Amino acid sequence: MDFFVKFWGTRGSIPTPGNRTHIYGGNTACVELRIEGVLFVCDAGSGLRELGLDLMQRKNPPKLVHMFFSHAHWDHIQGFPFFIPAYIPSNTVVVYGTEPGDNKFYDLLSGQMQSDYFPVNFSDLGSRIIPDALEKDGKIIEGVKVKCIPQIHHGPSYGYSFEKDGHKVVYATDSELDLELGNKEAVAADLSIPRKVPKRFVDFVRGADLLIADGQYTDHEYQSKVTFGHPRATTLVDLALQAGVRQLAVTHHDPMQSDDMVSSKIDACRARVKQLGGDLVVFAAREGFELQIF
Amino acid sequence: MVDIDDWAPENEVPTKTTEIMPVFKRQTESFAELEQIHGPGAPAVYSLESETVVVGRALDADIRVNSLQVSRKHMSLTLVAGEHRCEDLESRNGVYLNGIRMHSAILRQGDNIQVGDVVFIYHERR
Picture 1: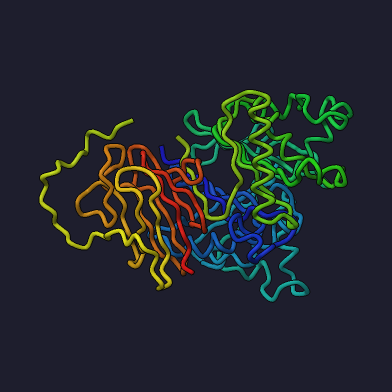
Picture 2: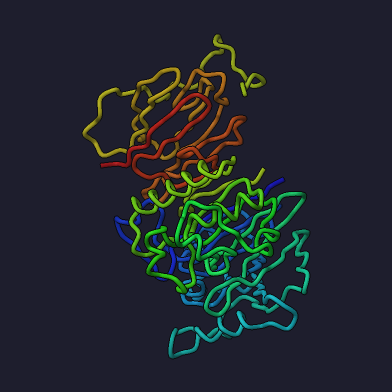
């Protein structure tokens, strides 16, 4: 089965170009999933611009784009006005809400393209842009089962799972898991103990071939960032191990983190895998990196 | 896993004479390089001067690696807007970037690329 995942934006909060972020990238959140030729896009951060340019170069670029949003903070929508395929009249962009009748993301995308913010109005985009929404139990879109889960963030935010023929990828960014740990006080006192991740998250992620998740902070950084809306990266290891995930891609890197700091953050996650025991593969999401899901 | 099915016999007649030979000594020109640090043929340094370079076991591969764990055309390195894009050419044993199996990636200084029992380090143009 052709099931590909590609990272176009892995930075959190604000685009962070420059030598410090040369390896992992400075563009904000955007992930492409191609499942049997069907294109799904998670978040429209500045990485979406790069994806759009790349789509225009492909031999048979898809005419239909299914777009999902974790939430509508700037770093997750700012790439949309620069998404070239949205200007092509023969294209269709479907913007999904998280429940029936939910047009929130569609409305917010159009809001950021009012003349005070941007020279091109949403209504002047050449493509057909239409709102749609997931049902209560998700939705099957061109043979792919898509489900969502509300997360802990200012807003809130939503995670999504994409399933096809027994393969599953979860995209779950901007979620402060640590705030909902069943033993968060004990964890704060002793980071080495196993973290009690809420069952609803474990169930949602269970059995994923790949979990792409917000791991913005190191353990040390998190001490001064509680309630900022992002977790300790190491907490993702507990979630992934408890849910039987095969591979964990840590994303939404903090804009203050250099490449070396991101690498150190991943080393800490790998050390936690060793400490807790398991076969989990952990890596830092990196711009331009593409995996095939087997 | 050993890639037996598409094994090219050693007496196969070469059809191409443009194989990139290892330079062993760093060149002063500013081309990116692929340094082989492990596997048959190591140590070696290959200068990536062509727009596309194919690594594999085939006699007409640009960088030829004589290993049963390497597919005939295992991976390609293509120069795109000044950066090298590495792509798995549907190889049997996959391409691992810094230990993670990948389909494609933009390469960065110091990346470790493993194909079968062969390990390369990528050096950006200086």
